[in-house]
Length: 90
Image (cartoon, rainbow, N blue to C red; front, side):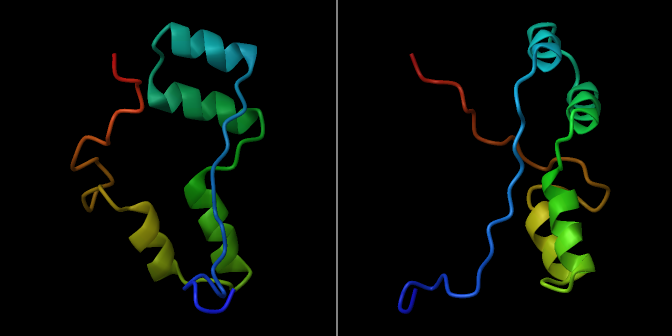
């Protein structure tokens, strides 16, 4: 797509399929860790894992993965700011 700034870029994403087990965990307000473990067992690939696959196949660098996936986190991986809410406003 000449002139758009998107030539040569790849989409990397994370998709969570809402299973009954995950829905129940969400309703029970389970931790992010518990939700992630169940989702990964169900076949979800995390954003970071998808990025690391790109490093392995040579389409990006580890530095770029860290830059993209660690935005909003400190050096230990803890969130540094509260992400915007995805809840609808009343």
